[in-house]
Length: 165
Image 1 (cartoon, rainbow, N blue to C red):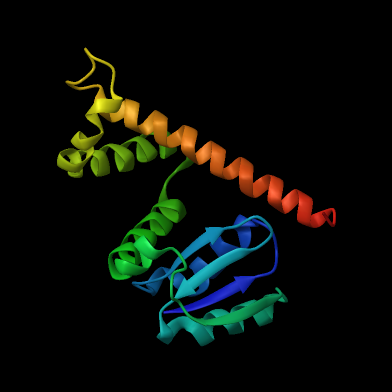
Image 2 (cartoon, rainbow, N blue to C red; image 1 turned 180 degrees about the vertical axis):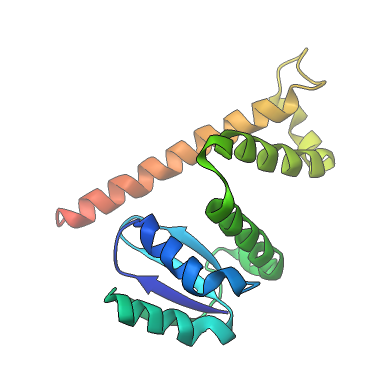
């Protein structure tokens, strides 16, 4: 799987265009919106097609070669994550905006349901009386707070870099 960095910030029309032209037939592709660019990963058979589409559309990009994830837990299970990232990208392309809340809820609930045994290790963090049935939303809220902290860190870091600090 090859990575392509698209040097434009979060333009969903570009991703939708690539999906319509090429990516909807690629069983591996996925994308991410990053702070100042977008990342598209696609199967080797689709790589040249995607690059040609970007050239035709006049969209600046950088080929980044084979995907090796920089997060150790993701890299250790990269094949599994590739399938998840592909499924999430397909859902993003296919889900009607009116269904988005239900889609997000379903994705989170299904994963939490599957990890129930390992999530139970977090029970000491859950207040008494909430053990049955409430562990899932509590863990989701804790994760949301941790994600907010991480986003704040990276947003501040990006802001400082752009200002020359």
